[in-house]
Length: 67
Image 1 (tube, rainbow, N blue to C red):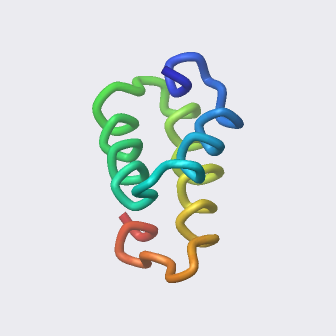
Image 2: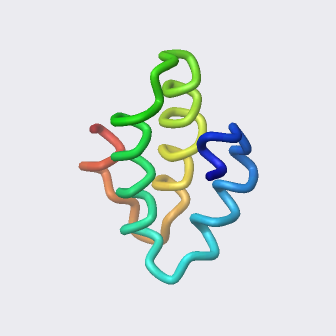
Image 3: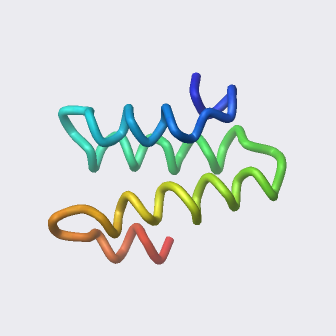
């Protein structure tokens, strides 16, 4: 819901507080590719939020960062 409402702050909070951060990040990536039509917003979501969360993990997932 936070993706649709464009509340990236709440999305980041939900991802970092989830029990399975990797699965939540993967889900958000899939949703952004499938349902976010505006290119600018998708870029903001992927680059400015999801990549930064991936990089902040204890063991960054470089494969998903590159995707």
